[in-house]
Length: 79
Image (cartoon, rainbow, N blue to C red):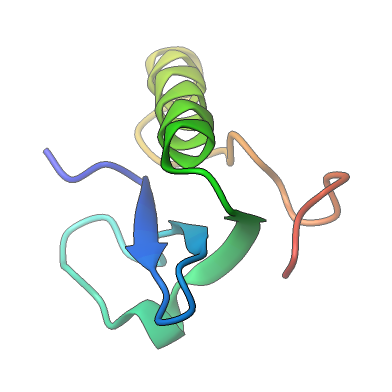
């Protein structure tokens, strides 16, 4: 199963948490929604893991990938 939230390592050493646009395929990172920048790997991994756990609960309640764990307009979201 592909996790909805993942980490992209940027060239300047920062880490960007992204949300996949499509459930069934691996997309190019440029197509996926930017969520939040981190400077520490542990923080980025913790954030992405927490978002994926929340997403699993939402999927169980509302259906697979119907709701966003981190909806657009949520405080701290880049896109």
